[in-house]
Image (cartoon, rainbow, N blue to C red; front, side, top):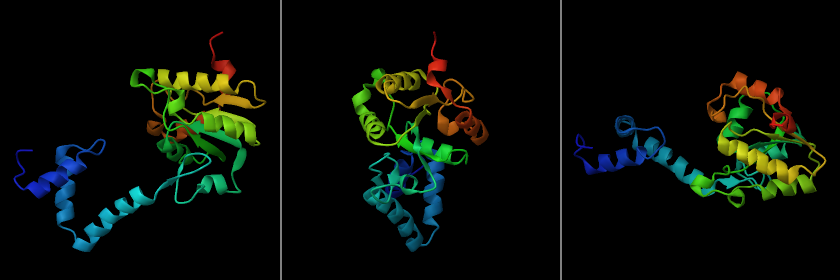
Length: 206
């Protein structure tokens, strides 16, 4: 970045610039803002991310982020543990929770099947979902993946793995537009899509 002559500032700008959606100008504003803060405030800021990276865990049950072995959702007695919503990643958990329309638990796949990027069924958390269905009291699995070709492929694969179990297998309604990611859907639309979910078999082309 030609307008930056100080190496320390340039290094800091480059680090901020690695964040998604952050350009050089925004990164520079962040750096200059931090330079105006008290040293202890900047240290607290940086330490928060160090602690996050070093101490964050993933729930042994659903793969959500947590401070403990199990996340707060999985340990909550107020949640319906017979209802499991399958999502691509943790951002989708946040999106659905913000709707205040879902009271079940989750299963975070950690990705979706995408042969073009070399991601197959073994690269995401499908087997652990099957184990939960085999070992638990799950009555319904809701597929809440993005309405993309990769998302649909993943739903169909999981459907084939679970079709012989005595459970309901549903998918969120198409209130979420084809091609959209769940994290970008507005809360009302996403909430309605959860509430008005449909049996997956009904969405298949006959």
